[in-house]
Image (cartoon, rainbow, N blue to C red; front, side):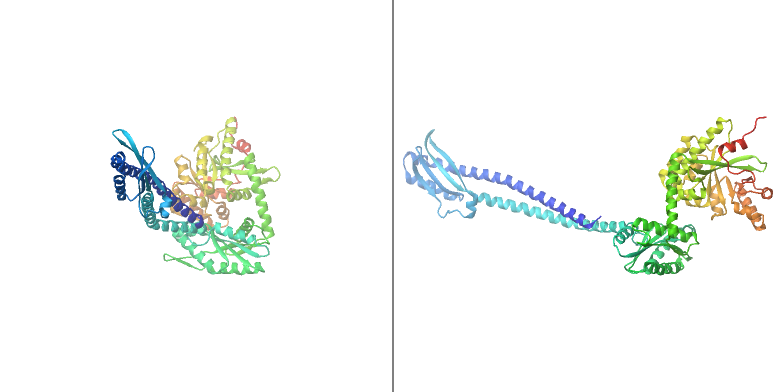
Length: 606
């Protein structure tokens, strides 16, 4: 929250409160004025009545001296300035004027009040008394009242200010903290993504100045979290942040933009590529030094992508995208390195962007379908099928799953892809049932990216009963990485699916970083040995021994074992000899279109 608007709001509130209290004082003063003025007139009228009653006899007996003496009694009333005793016909009979009664500035301001009293004797009028009074006392009393009210208001405001001073200090501290958190990362103290993007926008608005944008990712950071816990991961991020900061000039900027990702912005008046290369080389060399944590020595490396402004990009978004692409290129080439953005990478970004747009269209138009690869037991019976997503583009032709599945995961389209797979299974089941064939259970792959958000989990779980997909029809396959990203979550979608009765198979076993404790906690019904082990089994006795060990462990945990990638009869015989339960591969059947798999597996009439 900006400080200036908050300060203005506070001052405006204080002014409103003060003005309200001052208005209240003025209103009370006005009411007091009316009351004092009425009292003054009443007192003046009382004086006239008392004096008038005592002059009636003097009027009747024409005793002017007596009347004059009675009028002198008005000296006891300091507010009376003059009095005139008149006969009934209006002739002046006697008069009184206070000596030295010239009106000062207050008297001139207050003015005079006049009252008239008719004098009667035995019910007959004999004259009248006109009394004039100075209203200065009204203003003096009013001024005292107003001053008292203002003093009370000032005391109240002062006490309020004193009491609220601590609160205002706390509010200011909270506002400063909120401003800091809005622009900085709480863990590392570095500027955050918002701050970095603002700095990048300012850099792109300065023509004639070259800048280099670096996108930095900590390699294998997830393994650090898994092995050393989040405390170890946090320590790595803090140390990496401090080392990055120490390698840069004060005018350069380093920010943590999310997770294990950092970004750097450096200004280079000339030859930005050389300056960026020097900084990136220092980062790659010096950031990976050992990190001590809780008696352990943690080791990490970083991959760095570099984009040059304005050579590679002309705006902030493009610059970030180019640096990100270069960073992923460094990761694909082995990590622990830096790479510059290139025209080839730019073409790859455009290709991926075009393919992503086509994939969105394919999902909306229903271009995606499933092919099914049967899983056989030792007697050659199909006991299950794996549903594999396929995409036939109207212009591109068949798009390889290796091209569009990772794209769907990185773009978030994997959520819609998973829902499309469920709908496709339902449609194919309906078609097979119309032909009088009930297929074996179908397995679909789950990606952890499908369930990053709660609303995505709920959509997936709600789709199952809506489509009428039951545990007898469907089971799910999980890769090791997907399992490790989800199983420890308290609201794991795996647990929700397990409670609904669905079974799981652990796919591509051996390619990730499983442990026996995780296998025990997963309680999968099947374990699928990756095809790379099956392929190596023909040339390596160690591979065969490893497969036997995997089978023994799986059986001990109550899991069936499926061997993937079986392509020769020799492999089939050897796997069965090792007590492998189920087989899947080109030797028995390739992935087939729905109508082809029905023709292959549907019992033929006698």
